[in-house]
Image (cartoon, rainbow, N blue to C red; front, side):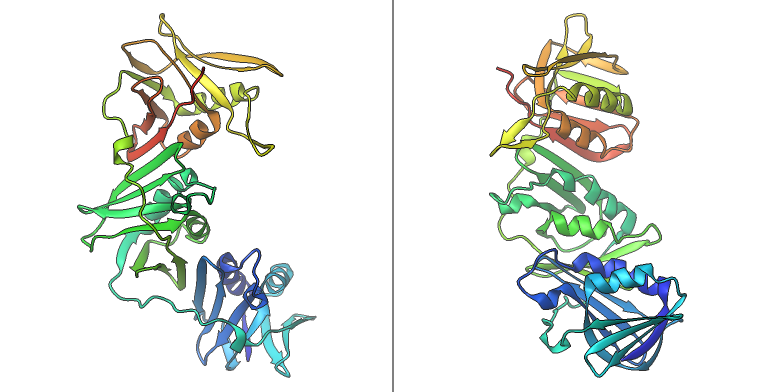
Length: 379
């Protein structure tokens, strides 16, 4: 293998491929990036237990004088290319044992691995795509993925569920204490109900650039492949049936409060500085329990009490309210802040149906986006 390529082109594609490198693996070969040069294209591949990423480079700067393949140590290769200042980089194999990287007056040598030891990556056949607006799909991930569970006790909840229902793509994530759901219209397509690991989706959003207009989705029984530009990004799907969450969302509300989103976030962050933290196995978790009260004079108050530190209280002026009863409700400040930050709206509404029932958050400019939070008992 012997080729030259523009450094910026190589580095940009390496940043994409790096999303498939594992942090830990029992297979040392998977810490490498597979390079496969044909007479016209350079393919780069990475893979871990959840995702596989392949890029196909056909840039005008790419000149392949000798096809071939190898597997290079991923982290060291990326670090070298990132630090090199040369505009053009030459890569070639020496004695089929060393990858030589030449850049201006610099030369770097990396011990390579046998490409025959690299596992065969079976990408889904690129047939029958579901074509979506890339920006909309990236947003639907960002608006939901944070609500997925980080605990492995219920593996199915560590993913985001995507369901095609009557021409709508419905994305849902929940950890049993909160829920995020977004709905968008999609082209006519076969019905499906799949759950994608949240970590895979988080990595996907990091490689979807603003200049990508469309993204193609290809489904199989246990895999989902995203194809855009010169990238194939494949993830496994989670096994099991995702719980029916439709009954969790209240339809009627006794109290509706409207706030400026940024002002509410700032107030909650200040009050939560003194809030007690939940603990799990001696590890502190920043759930930051606070409470919201609607007083008889319709003043909105958020507060917290921490026996070992002190108290905090702030009064808020809503931009609108429809109140029929007094209310005192406790909840996680962290959950509320993360939910609020998923909205692009400057004004949001918090809709309550009781002190022990879930409340939901909606935004005036965020069509079909629902955030739900379960309250905490304040006994």
